[in-house]
Image (cartoon, rainbow, N blue to C red; front, side, top):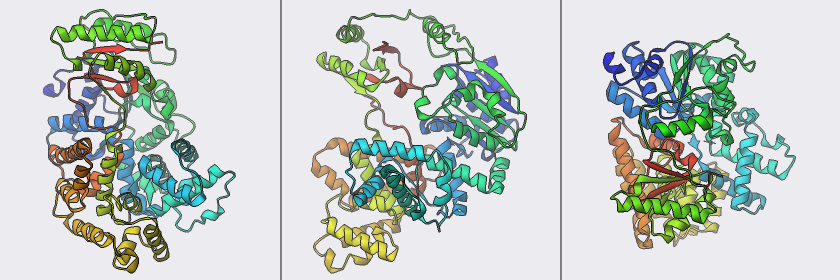
Length: 579
């Protein structure tokens, strides 16, 4: 136990050993909350003898979950199963894989990402004769999210006999939403909103299923609690009702996701929310508070500035960060314009470089992405290398989406969205007429587009194209899924489908590097955690992934929004456009 407490301060030890009941930990920036969380997890396993399969630890991102898993396995050993250290969406996916057949969905349902949603919308727009553009796509996705705030749609999506013609649209937007949801049901696809909504509905409809999971989860921990939505809190509180052990960690002063639906009052008024009238079971719960206020990240002058600014906020839990680390004063420049501002920044960076420093010692942060224009323009003019974080995500790049679509089709031949994406990449001379023939056959025979192609590939209409070769390749790859690792399978896909040659012939080395990076990340997953990685598990994890694991390791200044910088650390930071 002494080894477990080594390196922890008194407040962290208090958090680690406070295992029972409802506990709120207010953890200021840089106060070692992740260390407290992971040590508490190890304490519950080692000292209380609780199996990791009975401990749920909810994190905000997949990156945070993976970091926590590494730390826990370092303390406990590689043999421990840490699969319940996960994002809430990932955990809900786990529940639904086991229970969703009760809602007449297959357990291998598809998790839809943004591109999948856009593809479904494109189908709807084409059928309804609606012009598709980026603006209307974003608008409709927002409208669909708004519609899904009410759980009524889950009731008829989970009813195999539901007549969608009974839905009476009041507007064109309604008509598009209803058609979209109908197609979503056809593909057995769930988006991020559905994962939580279906889980909530499942628990409401089947109390025995809820009780099963309540009993299973002896201890529940939630990280970044200031970013939680009311709907997410209701689900977590429900899960805690049987064992009544809920440990939440967060900081109202670090709440930056209200635009995503986060409700800061849940952490500020935690005990009141535990007993909110929205819950059927009024348990009369009380909460214990622990404050982590010793900062290990920044120098004393920085902490002083932060404290003096944040204390002006009214809706917060009062705390005063402190540190023993000395450091230089925070510098403030009141520039006349952005040109003067960037000139000052470039001068400071140049002085650092001339003194033997590196560009990567610096980061430039701004409130909104459009502010980056003058920073980039200034750096280009001064030949200062930089990298913009938060642009097009790694898994949103065309070549990555193509490769993942091939993998998804090998895993599930009824994935029409993936089929349509890659059937002509590389080009196989399967145009609109042939695709329409496939769609007609698929509709008439209630089969997938791939199965339709498999049935028709030797017919007259598909002569002169590479349909037969495509089917043979996919069939051969599907036979290899059990004997090959995911990384080996990807290499075979790249070679056998001609996709690697297609990229090489395009002359775009960056695209090839991206695919190589994907392959490297898979090998890392297969070796890092020592757990078997199946193709379906890998694809599920990729879909749920919210942040790219790819980092630009070259020597350059990192520039990004403050939102993107959350959780990162830099030696020197310029905060620009402070107005």
